[in-house]
Length: 441
Ligand SMILES: Cc1cc2nc3c(=O)[nH]c(=O)nc-3n(C[C@H](O)[C@H](O)[C@H](O)COP(=O)(O)OP(=O)(O)OC[C@H]3O[C@@H](n4cnc5c(N)ncnc54)[C@H](O)[C@@H]3O)c2cc1C
Image (cartoon, rainbow, N blue to C red):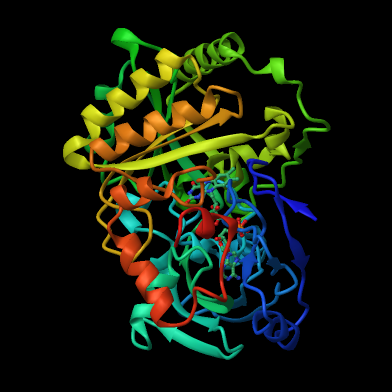
């Protein structure tokens, strides 16, 4: 069958299999052809699609135990982060780290070592993972952790499914008093101000900026910086304080059909961005918002990837080290504005320090944005890659669908080490995705 990631590009012919238990999984992993695990398909490109066999892990969806003293949850890899929230927020627990969608599996969150708006304070998803039960090429499950086979554990965080199949894991949740977030919105008229705001508010747990990437000149990098923190019970009014861990349930809209290609153009995107900035700059700067609205605004529109039409879209996400971030981001934003190709969603975050084997984050600034697949898109993305590499940046494989192998190696010397580990442990012939083949991992 034909399968894609969330960006609907590229389309890959694969055999999709959905094992229901460990024995079935073992039989598939030890077969003749390479396999790759797939969670909920929320990575954008071809990392969760095999050119031979793709293993849909969503039947592995049981939560196995929870320790109410320590907040440690043991669960199968196909459990969605949203299900963890539904089960444990009412008891006062929330994920330590969450990406911008709750529709990711625990296996997918570990394999991409996802980051949230709190990376500068709490690090990436790996920091809350105590151990992983990983199925190797021989079909055996081994428990790996910081103490047991630390090398394999470290490479499995961010290893994009290429070190084996994650079957179960133990993760630590964070205690929270309420289901509400204290949010502060700060308008920034240009990139420099936005970055200064991140630095000034480095102690605030959550921060993210939405960037208007169509604006140029003095307004280059015009943004809304959004800060957040878990509200305490004392922050709620009497009505909300009666059920502090229940913020109510919002419905979700769904995009019913693929948008036609002409719907997204530089004028519609510019108009949207202008409006968004003005409304954001005009709204009250402080607000109490429910957890779902704060962390997952995009989830309110299901299947929103259809807005980009049948040709799909590509996301560009790089991280630039602190010392080059200002110059590098300016150059990236200038190239994007020049091409008139910006998207609705350009997001800037400040990462804190991270020392890892193959995960994406490092201390600096990360910029992420979508581009509809049009004839000029791939050359523009190559140009953005080159700018990022010149400034010492590297790229997020969970978002990639088209990078060249030499670009990956220019940007990230750890790729050779990762490949060597795969070869030494006999993983390379067993676990392969369309992405790992394209990038020669
Ligand atoms: C709207 C939206 C917002 C996002 N925001 C963020 C963000 O803020 N921060 C961020 O870091 N990411 C973000 N992402 C990306 C997303 O968090 C990652 O792509 C995540 O890996 C998706 O999880 P998944 O379960 O859908 O995995 P898939 O997309 O199915 O797989 C992703 C990778 O994990 C591997 N994998 C999946 N399950 C297993 C398993 N059981 N064993 C071994 N390997 C496995 C796959 O082989 C693949 O390499 C966002 C994505 C979307 C769509």
